[in-house]
Amino acid sequence: MFTNLIHSIQQHIDLDEKEISILCNYIDSHQLKKKDFLLKEGDVCHDLFFVEKGCLRMYFIDERAVEQITQFAIDRWWMSDYFSFMDRTPSEYYIQAVEKSEILSISHTAFEEMLKELPKMERYLRISMQRALAASQLRIKYMYELTKEEFYIHFSTSFPEFMQRVPQYMIASYLGLTPEYVSELRKKHL
Amino acid sequence: MFTNLIHSIQQHIDLDEKEISILCNYIDSHQLKKKDFLLKEGDVCHDLFFVEKGCLRMYFIDERAVEQITQFAIDRWWMSDYFSFMDRTPSEYYIQAVEKSEILSISHTAFEEMLKELPKMERYLRISMQRALAASQLRIKYMYELTKEEFYIHFSTSFPEFMQRVPQYMIASYLGLTPEYVSELRKKHL
Image (cartoon, rainbow over all chains, first blue to last red; front, side, top):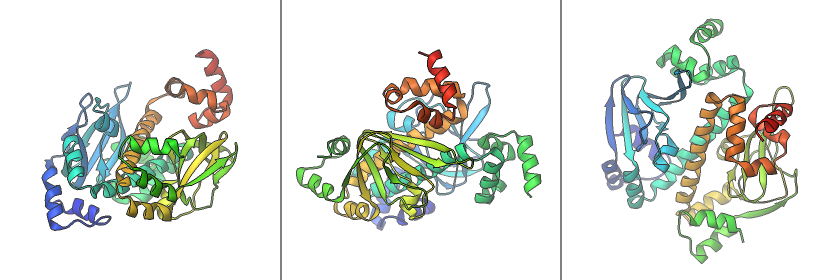
């Protein structure tokens, strides 16, 4: 049960059987079909989500009414609109399943109660947040540094599995490119 | 001593006098002059830095040998190259004082020892990392969403104090604009 989550936690802290069972009481599990939503614009993001298996995308609708993808999450990644989650403010994002997925969630209230009961989880979450922050810092550097073609090459060589799982038009949106240009790049770099 | 750091921590967790004194044993303090460096490209970023008072900038040198600023930190903000800090890899960044600053630091080794002795600090650090991650997530959204003029207006209205403290050419670098264009925008939106 929740194999990937427990494995992710036990890489950083020790949890015994009793603590795992306490933790699991705070976690909800969702079997999502492709295109099911976890969050829609205007709603408060009540949960932190963990991808036990599958793939999520996070996007907003821009001024031209176009979907702009800002993040993906695959197995063992956390995803949330963190400001909305922390400050209880309406989100500007959609979070949607890219494929059939098993998603775990912990609500804001359950999160705080769980941390009171299992304070050692703070360490696991601090390390997870720190690693996500490092990834975000590197991503911002790439946004300054790389041309769109370089970003495509970097992305497709760093995450080949991703390129197979995610439709080309979504990768184009994430990279800020047109689907036609991604198709050209794909041919060029095959 | 370390007034801003202690205040920042006590907003989230209770630390008694003895715990504060234990914490302070792990912290180093640096009085920096304007333009002093805390990190240079090619070095491992051994520390997490906290701005007790002052202002830091983080930048890299791009292919055209131009300084590209990716982050600022003012009073009560943490700054580090997180991947370099966590994985002990050489950094591609410089961290430099924009003005006379008092900077606190905790080394990688001291950080782990401090967390063993004061595990409750994990909570404070998790919350700090989570908030930095939220800010980074919003920043990436703006990088997709806003024109450079909109980004300037957003930045100058959200952080008016910043606009006063930081030279115009640094703000231009951070926003990905030429100093001339920032000067035009400043006149236009005064």
